[in-house]
Length: 329
Image (tube, rainbow, N blue to C red):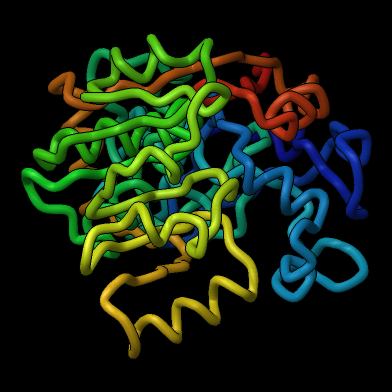
């Protein structure tokens, strides 16, 4: 067991631009009886991270503090090695390489170490993948795509599915997950990402700079907007009867439409917070191991450049995931 009681972490104490983030020495956590201590080798920077940093939308302040953040270390997914376990831990052992979703356990992946419960969303790192690949969206984009397409969209083989934002962190996984379900997949992205989205298995690609998919006359069983760039009202004509509009980014208007369409009309608007289980995570890691799911890394930064990583992700043009790596002695 490692004995040093301090670690580095990317900390912020007020909402604002990327510059509010800084590296600070903080106390290293100690695992409880049913917990594991993970030495973090890589972690992703997701759109949710910059939204929590910036408190945008403002509803985040209701979850994370009105005036200043309660959670001071962001980061929703990681990969690394277990270096200590609690007395009652039976699922893992010291030396196990793992990946984990930290969103429901206080965030905290942008640091040297993280404690997580052994029954949390922790799974063995997929064989044959690097730590960076294991941290590049499987827990965030992968679980999100599975939740929306399988649980909310109820995608069936042969259905037409459109993914808006198909080259992003969630979109790249959504294309692959929908394809694995037997759907006919259309990916919407920019010109420079057409080849990438095609390589992920999309049957059709639409360059949003050249064509508006809501005006081409094609209808879909499911439209999944991963980037918050279209609305249910705008997409309604592009949905088949009983079609579903799924939104990863949403406001109060879509919440109201979700409630309304759950009772009236055949076309449904669905706003949801992504959920997932450890079993779902293990299912996705198996897909990665068998080559059915490929994490995409756009850029990798050292943890010390966390502000630059946030700035790049917030810019909204990343391909796949952005990763940060702590520097361990």
